[in-house]
Structure formats: C-alpha cells, structure tokens
Image (tube, rainbow, N blue to C red):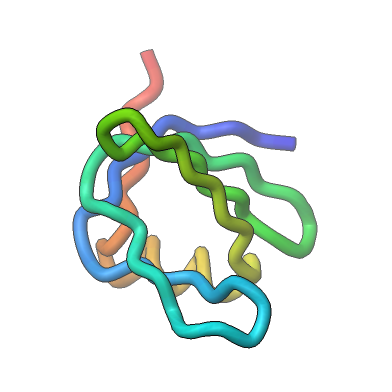
Length: 73
C-alpha cells in the first residue's frame, strides 16, 4: 500500500458513521492508499486524528488541490 506525506490545503471532510461531517485541519498529514480507501492521519495540537475516505473522493480532492502530495526525496 502506497504511503504519502502530504498537506491538507483546502476543504477536506469526513463523516463518522451517520453523524455530521468533520473537517480535517489544514496542515501536514500522512496518507495510506489501498484499493478502496485513502486513510489520512494528522496531528492537531496534542490530538491525533485519522479518517478513511473513499478512493474516488481522495482522487477528486487531489485533482481539486485540497490535498497536495509532498515531493519525494
């Protein structure tokens, strides 16, 4: 499974169960892709968050520029 360092640069939201959408904060993150989902992990102050989003939504957010992959060294 590919793992990427990235930055949230725009509006990226996820939903926990049937609840309201929750915004992922702008800033650095790590993304792990599989066939169906992209799991985004981030730190917001002392809190750590993680959310899986459908791979189609992830690809759309990349194309829109809301998620920017960091250059690999």
